Length: 135
Image (cartoon, rainbow, N blue to C red; front, side, top):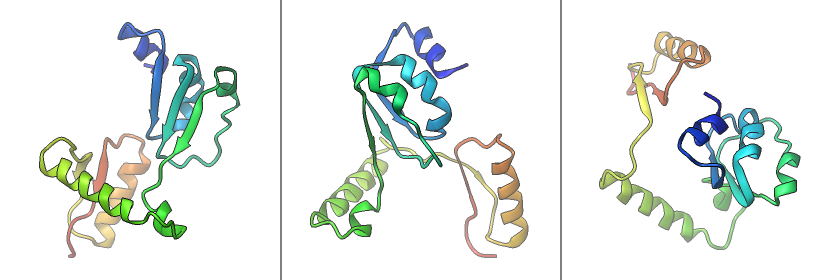
């Protein structure tokens, strides 16, 4: 079901906030239909291209979050990265945040890597696929 139809089945005409977690470029037309004027789109994914022009008429704010931006660019508030990671760790310990791990393909070796890669490329992967340990 398309994103905008899913939101409408919840009884919502529009939403103020949208989190672009994956394939934001593919979902952008639906996002543009459901996001409210002066809404906010926050992204963590990395589309090759993203034309946000459809959001202009609604004056939507768009922002990207990147875990390593502060360290990559030598930000003066680098300690805030430390604070954020500590907060995330505490939320994981409390069970508030949960992993998206779905498939563990076993120890790191060529065969398991090939199986995991084929699974992700199939388009049927749900959550994260990992290789754990060393063969």
